Image 1 (cartoon, rainbow, N blue to C red):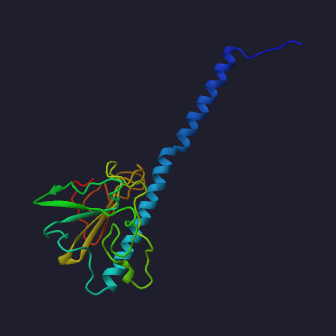
Image 2 (image 1 turned 90 degrees about the horizontal axis):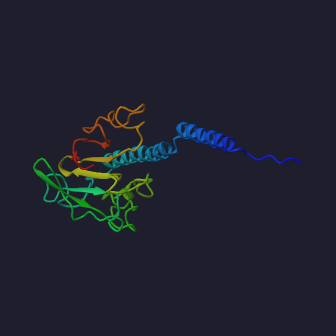
Image 3 (image 1 turned 135 degrees about the vertical axis):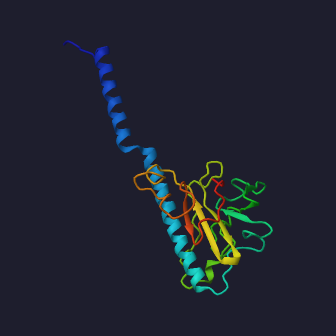
Length: 207
């Protein structure tokens, strides 16, 4: 019997075809973008839930407390509360300046940051609401300061106003994307997703 093997040309041709199929598959599915969109959908959903929860809190609670003493805008230590636990990435020694104010950072530990009783990363006690809408606080899927992917919160006590921001990853949901969410939220930063009843509170140089 004659034995016939593959020639070098045939092997190279097969490899070329496999490479082309793989390249086309990557372009069609774009796995990296798919995961970015999935994470962004969680961020968008989290922001909607937080916005609804704050609306309930401000409408139902008499004398609502949006944060600890001296941490509001225009108080002694205006503070930005972020979703990253300090035992993962500690930035409490960092400050940022915006206008005439210096802003400080507040973080809690990884055993506390999910709590909805005012001891979590958001310093608001939602457990006093009837039928508490949040059993745990949502956090960013990446939750990294170095990557600028985290949730941030700031408030102004005198007006009972607040703002929460997050950064989106997918081109689709970012400024000028097909489903642009960042420049259509009525905030003052077209590159961030902003919620709250005053979307001008957060320093625009945070992210």
